[in-house]
Amino acid sequence: TLAVGNSNVGDAETRNLISAILSRSGARFACVASGADALREMAKVHPQVILADLAMPDMAGAQLAAALRTSRVAANIVAIPSRTYLDA
Image (spheres, helix red, strand yellow):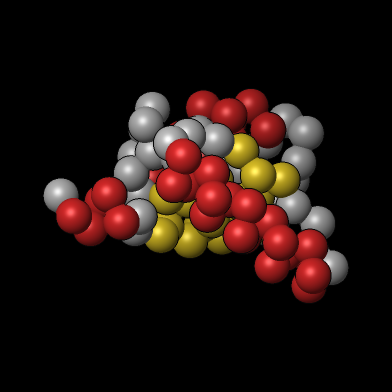
C-alpha cells in the first residue's frame, strides 16, 4: 500500500493517522508528501493499493492516476477528497 498525502500541516497529521492504522493492521506501506514523491517511490515500492489525496500541492489525484497508468503501475487507486478539496 502506498499512502499519498498533501504537504501542509493538516495533511501531515492525516498521513500520521493513516500510518498508525496501517501499522496496526500489519500492512506494508510507504507514506509520501506529494504526487511527485509517489511517482519516485514507485521505483522502490510495488503497491497493490494507492491512497491519493485529490488536492495535492503539485498534482491532482487524477493527474497522479493518469501518470501511473502511463507508467503501467498495476495498482488500485483510491482517491480521497481532503477538507481543502471539499471546501473549494
